[in-house]
Image 1 (spheres, one colour):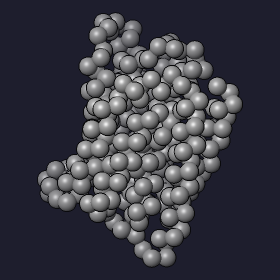
Image 2 (cartoon, rainbow, N blue to C red; image 1 turned 90 degrees about the horizontal axis):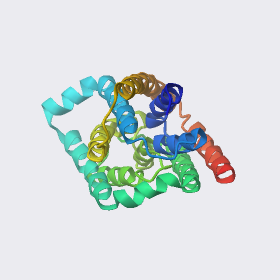
Image 3 (cartoon, rainbow, N blue to C red; image 1 turned 30 degrees about the vertical axis):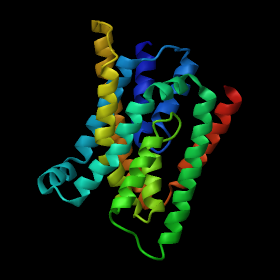
Image 4 (cartoon, helix red, strand yellow; image 1 turned 60 degrees about the vertical axis):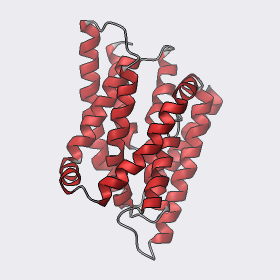
Length: 255
């Protein structure tokens, strides 16, 4: 991977980690277009650390409140994190094989599109009856299960969790906040798992590329968070459903 490809990959990561269109799915398809066959574990970790930095900075006040008050919301985030921990440890090796299957990724983008479409319909339905500000215990478990399903490349983690929250009756902005806070242990955990498999020596050129990648992914990710909350407030989540459907169909035919 050269520096140009690294910057493009970082920009794509920053956009798609939080936009509900699957970061893993897009990076798989992008690297396929670049002709990169081998997994870029070290660089992938750097990009995820960049987007982790973005969400921590964006939600810093919420994080401090969660940790100091230690209320129901923190307990629900911990509960919602359990499914992805269990699933990730149990089926990680099987899921990693899917990264080499662009057609599977494309099909899962279509699944993401359907999920987002249901969320848009739910927003219209609940609009007349009000919204829940936070999930129930059962809702937290279901959102956590949605996040666990999103380890399949092509299914958006943010899309699955935000959409599930909205389908359960949460206000879009509140589902967005819960999803982003839930992403912090998920991204950190995934990065730690990948670090265990990194054995290659990192040279100076690679380190510069990783730092640039992390900074670009973090900056783009922060901007994306600001844009996404506005999009959700305007009830325009269906645009991403249309995009994922189109990207998935194109991927099925191209790959």
